Length: 246
Image (cartoon, rainbow, N blue to C red; front, side, top):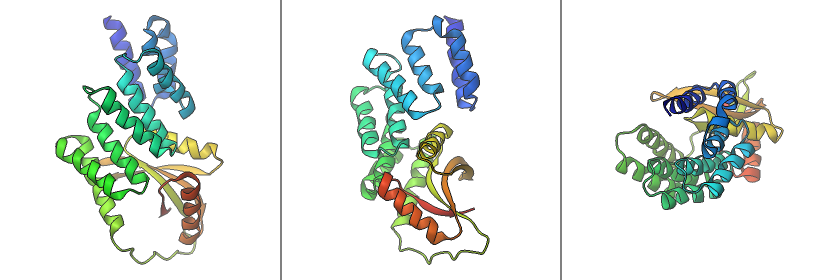
C-alpha cells in the first residue's frame, strides 16, 4: 500500500512540475495495479486535450460517484468547461461541487472560480461579491491573494477608459484571452484556440509574487486591429479579452 501511495504521489508531482509525458509513461506502467477510479482520475490529469480529460472525469463521476476523487474530478471538469469558454456550465458545475460534497476541501477554490465565471460573463457585481466572500471566509491562503488581485482588476475596469495607447511603428499587438495562475488551465485555453485555427502564444509574467500564464491570440500591427479581432472573439466565444503589445 505504501508503494501504491508513493507512486501516485510521484505521478502527481510530475504533473505539477509540468512533466506530463513522464507522468503518462509512469501511469501506463502501473495502471494495472491501481484501483479503477484512480486510473480514470489520473488519466484525466495527464490528458493533453480537454475533450479526453472531460471524458475520463465524467466516466469517473458516473461510475464511482462516491469515490474519494469525485469532488476533485467534478472541480477539474468545471475548470475544463471554463477553459473552453463555457462559463455558465462551469459556474453550475462549481456550485454542484459545493452542493454534492459539503465536506470537500475544494470549497474555497469553488467559491473563487464561481466569481471568476461571473467575471468572464461580464457580471461584475456578482463576480466581486463572490471574490470578496472568498477573501472574507478564507483570509490567509494563496487563493485569497488571487481574489484580491481580481477584485482590483474589476475595480480598474469599472473606471472610465484611459486614452488609448497609440501604436508605434514596428510594434506588434495581440489579444490576451486568459491569465491563469495554473499552467494546465492556460495550456487548455491555448489548445482550444489552436484547434479553432488561431495563432496562439503562451507568455508568463509575475504579479505580486504570483506567476501568471497568459494566453495571447493573433498578431497585429495596430491596437485597433487587435481590438476589432478581440470583439469578434468575444461575440463568437463569449470570451473576455485585452489588447496587449508584444
